[in-house]
Image (cartoon, rainbow, N blue to C red; front, side):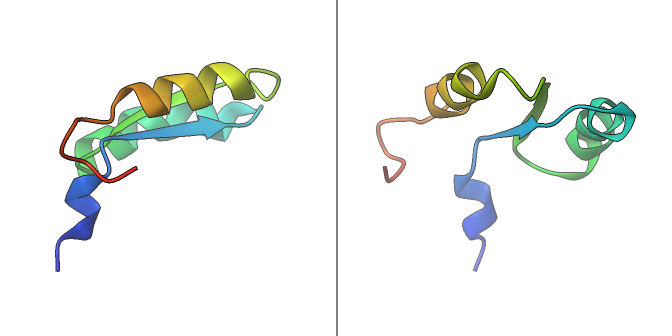
Length: 59
C-alpha cells in the first residue's frame, strides 16, 4: 500500500539545529512537503499542515 502518498504536508515543530536541517533533506527523500516551525508556533504549524488537504483526502 502507498498510504504515505496521501500525506501532503509534514510540520516539524521543534527548536534547535537539527530540526532546521531536516526539512530540506526530507524534502528530497519524501513525497510530502516538510517545513520547520519554532516550538512556540504550534498553531501556525497545524494551520499550514491542514491547509494542504485536498477535497479528496480523508480528514
